[in-house]
Image (cartoon, rainbow, N blue to C red; front, side, top):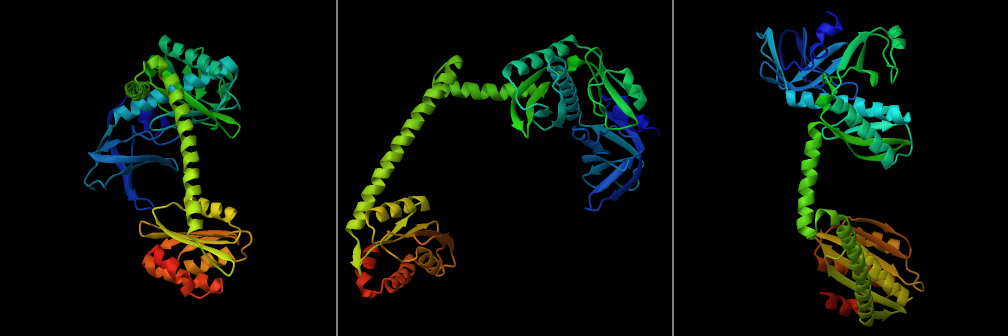
Length: 420
C-alpha cells in the first residue's frame, strides 16, 4: 500500500472517523502498549507538528509516532485480541487547531520571505503558542507589523491551499521557499502565487480557515530571532486572557484602558522609591542594633565578644549586622545564631585586629549539628537542623569560643545567661 493510501490524513485531513484492521499489538522497550493499523487517520509527531489523539475502539490514543516506517498508536490499555475491526475517532478540536497553526506558519513565514527575504529556519507548534526561528539577529516593530498584515490579508483572500505529490526532479518547476530535506515522496503545500513549500503536516483547504494571525512577541536566540504567534481559535483565547487582565487592571488602578501604561509606570516609580526608603530605614535599624550589641559586649584578653541569638532572621541580615560591628570594633569576635523553622542559621565574624580564624570556628560549631557552611578567615556562615536545643548548642559554642580566646568559661557565663 502506498504512503498516500496508508496515511488517511493526507487523503482527507478533515476525516474524523475511520474503520480499519489491526496489524499488530505489542509493547515497546519501555513497556508501553502500541498497535499498528492497516491504515490510519492519526497524524504522528513530525515536522514540528504534534501528534493527534483520540480513541481506537473506545480506548484512548495517548501518542502517535512513526518508527522505521510504521505508525505506532500508543494506547491507554491493550485491546482485546478478539478485536479485528478497528474504529478510530480523531480528537477533531486538536486536529483542526493544528491545521490552523501549521497553515498560519506557512503564511507568516512566506510573508517574511516575500517582503524582506527573511527565511524561517525553525518551527515548533506548542500547546499554547507557535514559534518560528528567523534567520536574522535583529527585528523591528515595522517589519513584524507589515509581515503580519500581509499574512492576514492572505487569510482574508481565502485562497485555496492545495497539496501535491511530486518527484525531487520536479522541484525546479516550482518557486520553492525552502528545499525539502527528503529526496522522495515529496509533498508540496501550495498557496497559488504566494507560497510553495514541502511539508508533511495537515492543513485546511483554504487560507480563510486559518482565521487570523497575531504575533505575540520575539526574542533573540543564538543569533536568530524566535518569534511567537497564534492563529485561528488561539487568537480568541489570547484575546480573552488579555481582556480579563485588562479589566482587572482597570479596576485595580482606577484608570481607563488608555491610561493604564502611564499608571503602571507611576506605580513602579513609587514602589522603587519606597523600596529605597525601606532599605535606608533598615540600614539605620541594623546600625542601631549593632551599637546596642556593642554596648552589651564583654571584653576578654583584648577581644570584644559579641554573642547573640535570634528567631526568624535571615542569614543576609545577620551577615550585614556582623559586618557593621566588625567595621566599628576592630577587636570584635561575633557569633550569631537564628532559629528558623527547626533549623539553626549561624554567622560568625571578626574585626581586623582579631586574628581568630572564623572558618575554623564555623566548622567546629557546625560539627555539633552536622551542618554545612563555609567562609574565610574574616567571616563565615552555615546552618543545619536544630538537633540540639538552642540552650545546649549555645553552651557548646561558649566553650569553643572561651577556649579560642584563652579565657575561662565562667568569664562568658554572664553573657550566656543574658541570652537565655
